[in-house]
Length: 529
Image (cartoon, rainbow, N blue to C red):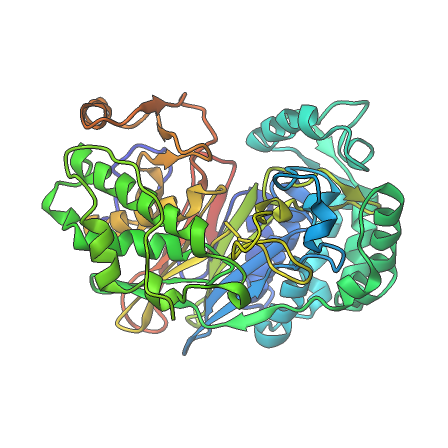
């Protein structure tokens, strides 16, 4: 691993025995405080995550979903805390629609994130659950200065969401968003956080907060019932493991789409990507083509695990991935459909402590503020339901109690069965793309987490168009165009390429220190002690 950052992102990596990295400095500090008060990495992650719902409302909220992969010091665990469709969401509920809505009540599935907090705290935390809410409540009650990138995202959301139930009353001041540096307070959200903390989330799923959300839904066009909330339950899952060189990439299994990153890496291995130099147009061409192939399969086959028609083992089969790699022309861009395998708005953070515990955690409202619907008490709902399909027979077809296709992905690397790095790259479909770029920088180029983050990125956007950062070398852009790629170079201040946080082990012993990085593209901070 190379410690000195080579890409000029303006940040040096953080080296410490205990560390937290998140997309907002105040949230990172809340996690550090939890560690200093005797908590472990899970406590730190939760304190950070809870604070993020207040200080970065543009990307996550109390009505969102979450996932985690963690190393407890002995083994890996995975948690799927994504919510399910309400009971009313039978196919006939959407008659007359050709596709799911993008915002509003008909995109809101039951929030799973709060249940995930409870589950993580009970199983692995050391501190009292209510103590984890201290900073979040303080910032909601007494205010905090809004950071620059968040202020920009807040402003850009207004034209899209201002007419959704509860949004303007909750997140605007005299019809405007707060400016960078302006103090933002939300006392009603502080009250909600206190209720969640005092009841260990019971109120959110079976008590007064649940009833308030249901009543608000019934009044403003939603269809939630108390039973929808009571039926919610997070699941402990076995992360999917896929070897890349000496390392193993771990991802949450479907309904998560992390398998797309693993498939792309398998395709790249079969295509012998290492024959081309790092940072060359040819290597990046192969990455793009592998990702397009993986996305084609992911969008066709990935869904709630209970409705998957193709097993994950088939999608990750090395022979199948080699057959997909054979479709790539090493000198020309291509177009790909799904293969035929044999049947059988987001915040990311990570934390690690000196005992060896590491956690990779992500929570999200999906697209910016999410659905735009905000229940009383500052409960901003995600719009994850927009990812369902309305095509009859599709594995991701909407149905009651079903989890939708999910783009938020915590990731974890191990080496020889031991933890190597907790990392993630938030940002819609950028996430699996960011994972493969991050993994290859770390594994093949030996870069430290901050340097992996600083390196210029490419992205296949939601419309399938190829975009690259302004910092991408011109020789790479020209090389990609020569191979037939239509390349759009985004402005230097573009927010389209996600935001990474990462913590890697320094050395192989159980109690070694860590090296952490936080993306210069956002307001975030990696810190330690």
